[in-house]
View (cartoon, rainbow, N blue to C red):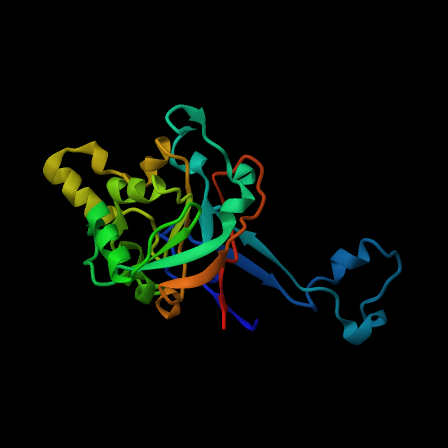
Length: 258
């Protein structure tokens, strides 16, 4: 059966407002004419002109956090424990079965920036698209933030998934979710305003903290979700295997059978 692969990941790149200041990637590029000293180290007497076109290799040095670019967060990122007391697993321990499953997309682009999605919102969207969640489905959330990637307001754009919305899905067997926003939760600038008004600390990172009760992972900074159907596709999002890490970069793709 013919298939179509849709890239739902963003670039790791310089000069894009993908993260707050001070947390963005810094990539230094070295071209084929700048690296001769590196290969010369291995081959005594070698001259640059001895090589085809005088060229050696190209490579890059990248200064990154594990949360730059499209990445998969492990339960350890959310809290030191999961499943109400178990040691939280790190990204190298995430079950690979979670990372290659049927996908479903929830369209929440109509919600205002900073809105906290509820379980009722999830239920109504599932009813609208006529879909019943199955265990291990990968649920992708399309927010307004997807259209703001690369703009200065990206980090503050989009709705966020609240505790009850997250738990609603986890109780149905979902173990991996994703968003095109900077965070699974509502942008901090909006949560901070509510916190100042209420003094309620349970509002802070409430969607992430659902992992204390039921273990799950999520992908952040997804892309192109608006071109996906609501269901009928597979998501592949295996994370880079970094020992003991809270997250790992992933080239997430959606696979559609046509």
